[in-house]
Image 1 (tube, rainbow, N blue to C red):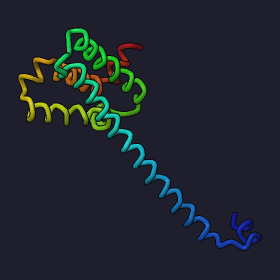
Image 2 (cartoon, rainbow, N blue to C red):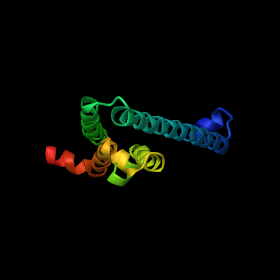
Image 3 (tube, helix red, strand yellow):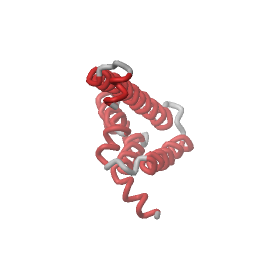
Length: 140
């Protein structure tokens, strides 16, 4: 590599310092995009669960749909992220659920969140996020 740099009259140290800076910039952009995706995903999931359970027109069918979604969606996420431990999975994919629980308790109260089934759905989803690897091992 040094011989090639000498032939092309390039400074070896400068060449590799610039490439490190470029890769560092790419890593920052990648982290930013991944972070924005996780925030959007968390807010979307919060909205879906809220619509299925807290909505004034939510009937038994939509609450049952929320229950099924709270089981199968985290299982798929846990299956695709088997390399993560439970706490990391909760922080990435379940932080919106934790925030949603706090917001519902503050705005509507605990009894409303429990009666509508929202807290049950979110608790099931969080448990599957945390224990997902054990569920997948049992399945095998």
